[in-house]
Length: 184
Image (tube, rainbow, N blue to C red):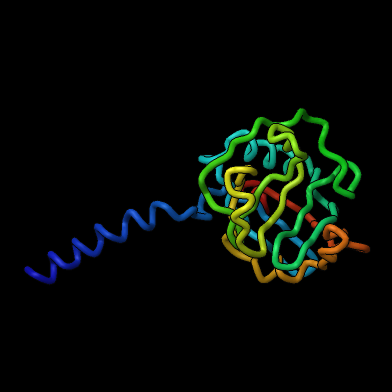
């Protein structure tokens, strides 16, 4: 009887912890970002940023991100991509800017956030993947997802220099990006 009680108690403690972790099983809210070095699997957090997650999926399905460079990559900080218009960080998509959807989720390794200008309501298509923790971004940028596998691939993305604002010459690119539910 004590063993059963201990098992039930342990299960009761484990369930809340499991419920908080984003799962990669929701194929409609999981994207595959393929690079020359492999695949990055990103769980979109439509529970935190529904408009931003919808935009990422829309642009992904349109092929907008295919062959788009990682134009700004700062070692220890983040890798930025998503400028399918110009490829240099100055462009966006044909759609209007999005209203900020800030949350309390901290910017830590593997978190995916939306890039923007100084206007909090200016995110459009560009996003970044965190290499490390950056508390200065907390509650200032929209968290749109989390890498659930493939951070080793993200670590291999060609880096720029911090002194040059992370600008990368001959940058690595997204070979293809797809919504998991659509992938063959």
